Image (tube, rainbow, N blue to C red):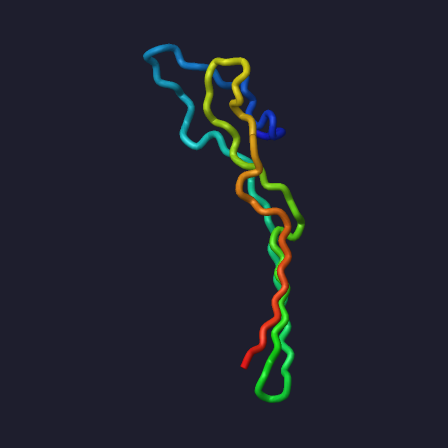
Length: 106
């Protein structure tokens, strides 16, 4: 299993069973692409007099903006136009997000 979003599985290695027979494909043999996401955060506290502190924070989610693909279609049929093995979306994964925060701590 490897490949592109349009052909994640080698479709030629799968066939339909003859009627009234049990297939020999094991459980969890078809897996999808991995998810790669690196998050990073940094915070700095700065005292203001003796009683107050200001905290500045920056958080970065999916900092490398790596595309994470969804799961491939795993419904197999004999149709030549089948979408078996095709990844049709990017799942519910976010693109790069950056957020800043400023807090006054008492």
